[in-house]
Length: 286
Image (cartoon, rainbow, N blue to C red; front, side, top):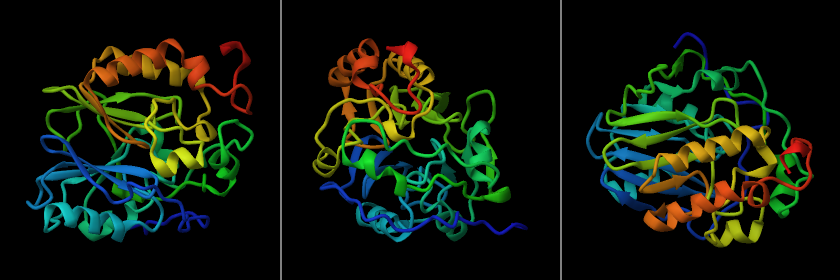
């Protein structure tokens, strides 16, 4: 690569964790969820075979060794994947992407609207510490919002919703949390990886994050800037009738439990997800 990849100056280890940190779960055939501190990464395929798997999202800053150790623990050897696919570019989803992409010498894919945040051109809006919900929201000012620079390593996903390195999966544009946020659905069984389009833990509450108390919720409030789009995105995902969902934060949710909770989230999104106040809250939504 001609251009050296780099994180922002604000990138640093953030000492937050959960009781499920490092406790992986095979949620379906060829689909593995690995919690890294407070965020999930996904393994699609089999890491013990070279070029037979894909990593979805890349965890917290300084977590490359933690991710590699976690995958090794469950799969034995970790061979290079076909590549890394990102749901979006927030710090807790791209935290180890440079180290891993360089180590494996693989491409990174994201939605074209996310590329400015992944190529050093544009910062995300500042986190909103004023939203209600708990201590993590109040502490969100410490979370980096500056772009990282993946240079030519990162590529835009094709407009036809294919994922070149994930046959059998399609990407869905689910903006709101970020402009280029995407989710993934496997055609065969409607398994979903949804990033932060919705989550299964109240991500603003330190206690609930630590204990991973399962509760369907909208995207993390302190980083979500377009609540109208976020609501529409959850509705799109519900209408696709997912069989299971791995969310960016919280435990995977399955079957009827997932369907009924998604229905409730869509119907009561303004009460469950949208903050009562905050710099990104559009009052006409209430």
